[in-house]
Amino acid sequence: MNCARTVWRMWVTVTMATRGVINQAPTTKESEYMVSAVVLITVQRGQVSETAQRLLEIEGVAEVYSVTGDYDLVALLRLQRYEDLSDVVTDHMVKIPSIKKTNTLMAFQCFSKADLQQAWDIGVE
Image (tube, rainbow, N blue to C red; front, side):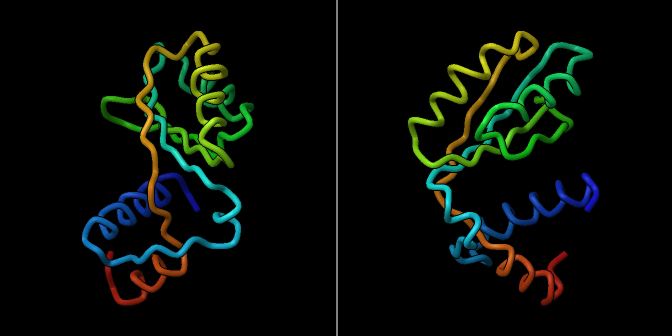
């Protein structure tokens, strides 16, 4: 799946969730993690790719997307405990000199791919 389609599906998931279309139902793989978070990241000019690669080296960082808008990168974190979130953001991310600013969003509900696929099947695009 290409990046544009992945970002589109992320947007559709968020939009559908806010409209109550998707019910909470974590998949087996997702349920292994107790804490999920999204970190919005601003980096120094010309350092997006290098910063993304450094972020992926941190345990708990599941995915990193380059994005347009006020932020340069979005990191998806999947962790087992809240204490791990503190370790990833305040101990590891701050050591990457190209990161200028972060904004961490805690996830409180997980939506399954099965529910998303059902929504796609009924023609929500």
